[in-house]
Structure formats: C-alpha cells, structure tokens
Image (cartoon, rainbow, N blue to C red; front, side):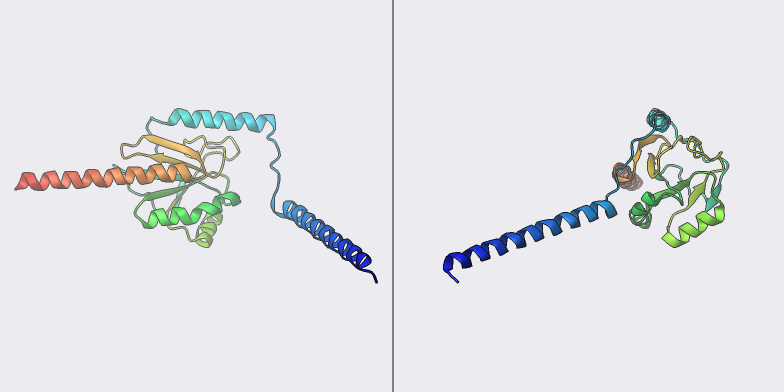
Length: 212
C-alpha cells in the first residue's frame, strides 16, 4: 500500500471518528435538554393577570403594618413571640416542589436565632402538612391558613399567589421586603438582625455607664 493511500485511509478514519463524536455529542445534548430542561409554558391571560394583581397588592403592603395571624392553625410549634423582633415569613406548600430547595437555608437561619415562620395556604389537611414538615425536618413552625383555598385566596391576609414566596417584617411590625424565593428576603432579615443586635449592645452600654 502506498503512502498516499495510507494517508487517505487515515484521513478518512479521522473524519469518521470526528463525525461519530459530533453525533454522539448532539445526542447527549438533546437527551439532556429533554430530561432536565423543561421549557416554561407561557402563562394564560387569567393567570398572568392574577399574578400581576398579587404582586401589585404585595408591593402596596411594603411600609405598612403586617397583618395579624388570624384563624388558621399552628403546626410544629406554637406562635412565636415576634413583638419587637424582625421575622421572615416563608410561603410554601406541600405540593410546591420548588419550595424544597430553600428549606436548608431556612433551617440554618432558624438555628442561628432568626425567627422564621412557614406560611401554608388553605385547602391542605393539617396532617399532610405535619408529615411534610417531619420529612423535611423543618425547625420552625408553620401557620396553616384556614382562608378559602384556591389560586386567588389570601394566606392570613397576605395576597400571595406564587410559591415559594417570602416576606420580611421589621421589629416595628412593618413589611419591609417581599419577593419570590428567598435571596433578597434573607439578606434583608440578616441586615435587620445585625441592626437589632448593634442597637441592643449600644443600649446595654449606655445603661451600664449610666448606672456607674
């Protein structure tokens, strides 16, 4: 076999291998997209309008007193003492798979002294909520709303229509932060806790010097 023929065979084999590799890569990419990446369908007009109304109403609550916990049922603990303390409300549901990813962060916040309160919409049996809490090993109480169930039903006075959602209330009882997920609310809560801790230290320091 001549050198020219040998080179031609090698070149052909190399191109064939490259083609196989490219084809395999495309198949893997398509399979990954099909299995793990699910396109989000556009919201229908009614749902989009409901979401917008919910966001507008929640935004209007910022800077105003937070609604009192009314009706409902406390699960995995009683109502925490929130007087004069900042706290975080996390709106979740047993049927909300996207809520699960935030539970470790919330447990960590609670373990570090933050007041975290789970908020669950109506329409779910208390026993089912209790089971979910035990399975996820949540270390904070959840308020199960007794408001009417449904996508437009409020959760103890909060017009939340999207889960997961979080709201921060400051030490004076005013809503100061709200949004989807947890990121911004967590940041705000930690900021308020630091401010509260610094204020207490100053107060103790002033009181000590006055006593002397």
